[in-house]
Length: 317
Image (cartoon, rainbow, N blue to C red; front, side, top):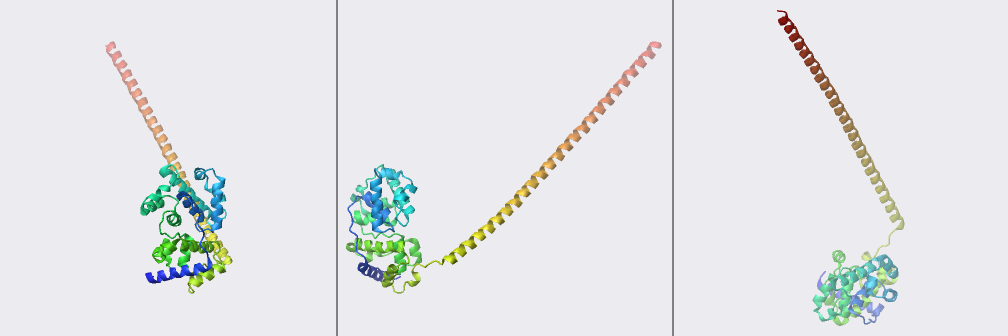
């Protein structure tokens, strides 16, 4: 898409969304708090994110206690967040990564660093996403970054700002150039609200009306309802195919096992036959040795007898 067309659509998004949403008043937080709050906020409504963050602060003694809590337990805290497990895991991983990097949770020093260096550090933490790092850059580090979660990327795709490949990559080129820095926080807030509504209720008439107001030709890119009967039939077909495949694999495994067992039996029989032949051969050899020994004794006895006869003849003369 031409840069001018992309910028025009982004400008239209801003204009339309201002009619339907009001920017949320930001609460002043520390850098680490904004980073963790963003983990709650990604693809979630503001009220749900506020409640989730409040529960984290109320139910745990400090961030270290949150860090060592299981994702399953955190999932209950994130229960009102659409992607509860993923967001909880991101928060836990972020805390773990920050702690391992400096054995504390104080990130205020990032405010004194060059923005590029600060962003590079934020993005190096396991658990941070494009949304969470951009949110902190925008709210706490003075940067001009528009936070976009999956819902925001989906909005950009539906209204034609990006194509399928860019949506798959999660990139929106030219977004910060099209939105002035002075409008960045407002645009980010109202876009996030639409994105959260889209994630929570993709077939909402309100959401579809807003998206079609931005791009009247977006119908083909709107989320499609799944035919439950068709889905069930496809699932049943897939299960049947998997069952047949397992049956084929089981039959092959059985055949292989039988072949292995048969080969082992034949080998054992052959070994027994070979052993029997060796035993028989040893017996024959032993008999031959015994016969030779008997023959040798007979020859020796004859020699002794002959010597005695000879001796008697000599004595008689």
